[in-house]
Every structure is written in structure tokens, then in C-alpha cells.
Length: 274
Image 1 (spheres, rainbow, N blue to C red):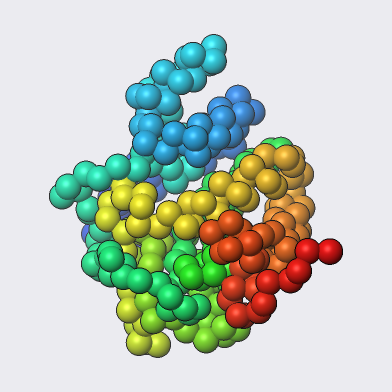
Image 2 (image 1 turned 180 degrees about the vertical axis):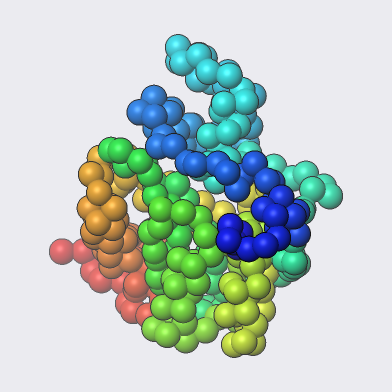
């Protein structure tokens, strides 16, 4: 984006691109061990109290003897991609050039596989550092159709996951996401629009709109991620992959009548208990 060899001054290039000049000169520093531990605890608290913003989280941490400023909590939440989830009217601000699509699922009965797919991103702590997990989920069956890990929250790994799901399972009628810049980007929405898939986006901070994916994240973290200390990204990828295979193939869901996501997605009968 910024061409340091160009005749146009960097300040002018930054202004034309709509970015801060200071960010051009910023050199990222590794996250400290203390912040990594704090980020993991914030992630755990966010799963328990998704309505908690930086002020409340600071108070919850203080109650555990962890003294940290509210602004620092807010900074870490932003880095992790976390946001208190409650409705706030007229706060939707798409990235420049990005379109926000209406929410299409309100009062819509979801009665079959491939009617609605959803996608989201979550933060995954490791022994040192962290990664982001993106997954495409079939709403009706809760089946994870595809997933990717990434060290950044750019749109590329989301697009890869969507393209894999489309190649393997056909296409949904509706694809639902939140209003994150990854999902409102032209590159991402073009993948869906080119296939005549209707795009649906959650209301800003409306947790009920994508609740099935939020439930998936809770299962992934409490049944897999928080039990591990991934040493490398490849270790995280292999271990999470094994868990998601178990989640799809063997883990029964009460809301699916005791069936697994695979049994529901592929319309298989419920196996009799041995």
C-alpha cells in the first residue's frame, strides 16, 4: 500500500489511503508474557459474560486480584477481536468502501441443511502468542464445514475457508456473518455474490444473531483449547483439527435430538446405544 520509494511523500500517501501516518512508522513488538496471560483470562471471562465491556472486565479482574487499567483492557480486547455484545443503535460504521448487508434471518425457520451457513472468527491462545480461528458452520446441523487458522485477522484465511466449504458442500441460500471488516470486504462478499448467495449480517453487537457459532466457540475452547498449551501454530492446527472431527462425527447434541452434526447434516439415522 505505502510505497516508500515513490516520489509522493509518505504523509500524502497515508492521507490518500485514509490511514494514520504514525501507523506507517510503527514497528510491531511481541506481546509480553503478562499480556498473553491477561488476554487468555479476558477471553475466558468474555465467554462467561459476553455482555461485559472493558469497564466491567476491569472490575472482574480486580476481583481476582488482577489490577489493570480499563484502557489496557480495551486495547487487548481490540487486539483479540472481542466486543461486548449488546444492541447499540446507529453505531454500524463499515470500513471505507465496505457495504453492510441487512440481517435476513429474523423469524426465518431454518429447516434443512445448506439453507443457512454462518461464519465467525475467534481468538485462540497458545503457550506463547495466539492465533485466530475462522469456521464456516451449517446452521441447521451445527456441522463445521470448513475452518482455518491465521496469525492475523485479514480476510484471506476467511475466503479460503469459504471457498473450501463451497467446493465440498455446494452452496447455501443465505450466508450470515457479523459486520467485521473481513466479512464486509469486497474480496469476501464477491465470493458469495458471484454464486448468487444472499448475504446476511448481524446487527452490531447482537449476540443472538450468530448464537450457534458462539456456542461452537464455547465448546471448542472449554473442551479443547483451554486444556492445551499449543507450542506452535502447526500443533494448534493439528489438535483443533482432531477436536473438530470429533465435534462433527461423534459429539452428540441435545438440540439435535442426540444426533451428531454429521448425522443431522447428512440425514443419517440415530444409532442405537450399545
